[in-house]
Structure formats: C-alpha cells, structure tokens
Length: 261
Image (cartoon, rainbow, N blue to C red; front, top):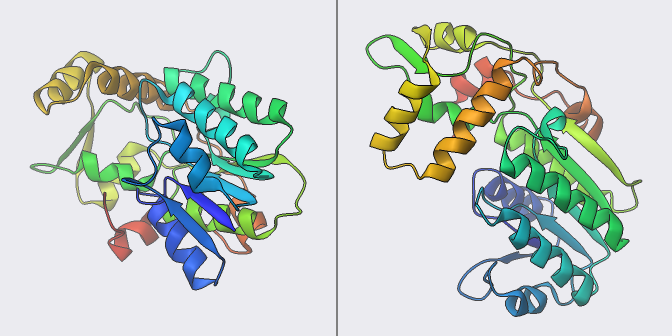
C-alpha cells in the first residue's frame, strides 16, 4: 500500500492518476480525514502503508509539516519514502530560499530516521509558466537570461511512480529536468512574444497587487534570482533512467496545452 500525501496538486494529481492506471494500491491522504497540521490524523492515514509519497505545498511551516509527516510515517510502520524535494542544486543548508533549506532538512530527517528513500529534485515546473503568460506581446518576468532545464509536472509524476514501483531500489537522489536548458527568451519566442527581464522591485509590486503574501513574494524573488544564475540550467538523464523515456520538451508542453493549476 502506498500512502499519497500531496495527491491533489500540480504534480500529485498526475501521481494518483498514474498509480491508478498501473493498478498500484494507494490511499490519498487529504482533508477532512487527514490534516497536515494534526499528526494523529497523519498516523491514522498511513496505517497499513509500506511506502509514503511525500509532497507538501510551499508554506512558512513546511519544515515542521514535513517533520510531522516523517515522524508519523515512522510511527505507522512505513518503510520507505519517495519525497518530492527542491531543485537539485538548490537543496542544501545554504539554499536560496527558506523552502530549499526546509527540503534539505527534511531529507536529513528521513535519512536519520533509517527509512529507505528516494529524493526527487525537480527543476522549475513548466506549469509555472501559466503564471507568466504574455500580455500585449510581452513576457514580463524577473527570471534573468540564463537557461533553465525546466520540466513538465507529468514527467515528475512519472518519475515518482517509477520510484514507488521499484520499491527495492537503492536509496538515492534524482535531479529531474527537461531535455534541455531553455531561456525565458526561448519561452517568449515559443509563445509568439518578446521577453522583458523585470527588475525584482517591480516584480514584487506586481505580486503584491495580485494578493501574494510576503512569504510568497520572498520565495518567488529568491528562486527567480537563483534560476537567473544558470545553476539549474544543465539537463540530466534521470527522468529517462527512471521511466525509460525522454521527458517532454517545452514545445511538447505548449503544444499539448498541458493542464494548468
């Protein structure tokens, strides 16, 4: 039995659909029965599961929420966790954002628990481009000019399902990317637009006007600055190694009209 925590979001809904398509027994942990902020419901929801798919939303309390989930997994007798973490180069004690550091601390907690594990570290999701749609022929974003090896959420999900299916695989990290690094100028051209690199202060003002919280604004700008360095611009072969097929390209994603969230 696979317990699925985070099974209704951009990546998670693909995970649950693919688990069902493969006939893999799973249980989606969601409200009202299971609440991330109520460890007792987490333990009850994981009862009888031997694996946990762990994906939590960006949140100021992410580290504590994941710590409670890991502790609940240990208490419930779960033997292995497949966790969606932060982008490969970003995860570490000095990560570019609080969530990147939280991901690293969660990975450390899982390793210290003795649970077997697979850590999936995806690059920028192509689905996030839906929040940066061109207007009046211009794509405005504070993303710099470096390439980003962005990935489709469905490919992250396929990698997760493959990792869950291969329950005896060695413990390891996977850096999940698309097939190539693409710049935001490339993204704009694919959409028939021109890219304009927006200064962070103007991006923060636009986010504030859209109702973003201080946490969301800080996270967005820190990650934008990180991607602008080119640190996550080199593609890997990890999706192919896990799933047996190449990941979708940006043009595949745009042509398919991939679902937005």
